[in-house]
Image (cartoon, rainbow, N blue to C red):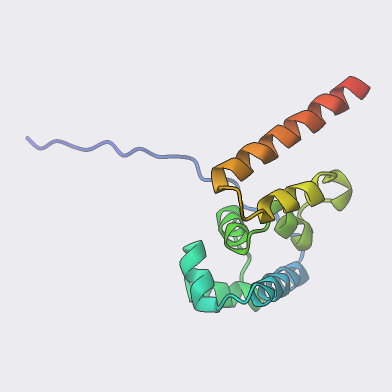
Amino acid sequence: MTRQRKRRTTAAPPPVPWPTSTTASSLGDFIRRQRELANISLRKMAEQSGISAAVLREIEGGLRHPSRTIVQSLATALRLSAETLYLQAGVLDPQGIGEAPAVREIQRDPHLTERQRDILVEVYAAFRSNNRQRRD
């Protein structure tokens, strides 16, 4: 009699709803420009993000729509917030992201750890949400 292993499954996040095909190329252009401004080679970006160079080329060329996980990995490697990339992709409405400049600055601070950045962003979002509820 053999034992069967039970596999643990976790639900994958839903795919990002990309509005149009032109969005992929504009997001890819934006990612490439940010990578070049940061003076990061494609190979180094692949190492830092954990995404293959071939996939990065396809994203930068507008041939591939990245998943949420890939967008988050790219944002981290570029030291940007994922919200910045989502705004560029047209997934988020810029009017609905009042905190984007503050979040972007938190993400860029080289003196903070990734965990500290995440906590600051969460606290900031909680404060804004609480203040919004008080006004309403």
